Length: 268
Image 1 (tube, rainbow, N blue to C red):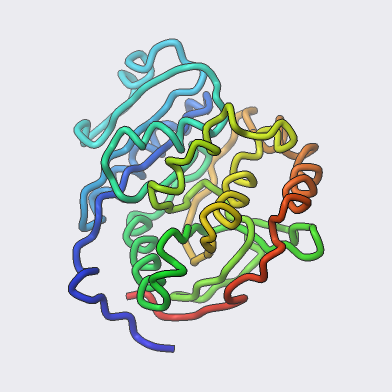
Image 2 (cartoon, one colour):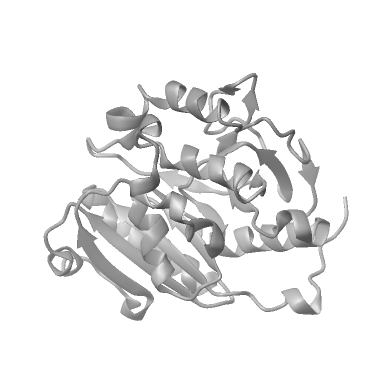
């Protein structure tokens, strides 16, 4: 294990855009907004959050009920239910180099954006060519013989500063380079019918097969919030998930051996 010391190139913390979908879990909205404000305040670089109100007819009506201490931090918009596509696509309106995608069913600690970016910078020290488009999050798993190892959430008891390479990365609380999300195959119209609503499966597949980039987990502290009867997993994903995994593995997902099964380095 070695201590990570950023080079002169790495000292500047790049701008981060946050993409968040509100899925009509209105009792959670205030906590999510407050969490975003805390993360942005703690991050040494610029942050702007793009919040998409899925299925809402008016963003201003919802926003007027919220206490927003840093209004300049947010851009709100609304539209039809487009599953997870808005949290990938709407932040591309910014010029930020990195995008953190989150949902409205959990909140993160204030240092989350900083920890994710420090992990990314560590990966650049380890192998800048391989890891340039690497994605980093807090939950995911590996493919073994065409199946994802389960359970997924909480599967790995990671240590502080530990990076674990995985095949599947959940897109709630994940940091991506904008080039990864700004790809035509990630547009909703390009999602294969076979993946259903499992967009992060499709994104994990694209990351590995199109971008030739790895996905990593780090230890993050999160607080789960109630889903208030709006669970994408229960409503849309749970029945179709195995078939979607099978469809993607038949098209080359997991065929390449992971670059490293386990890679550890302190993140400072």
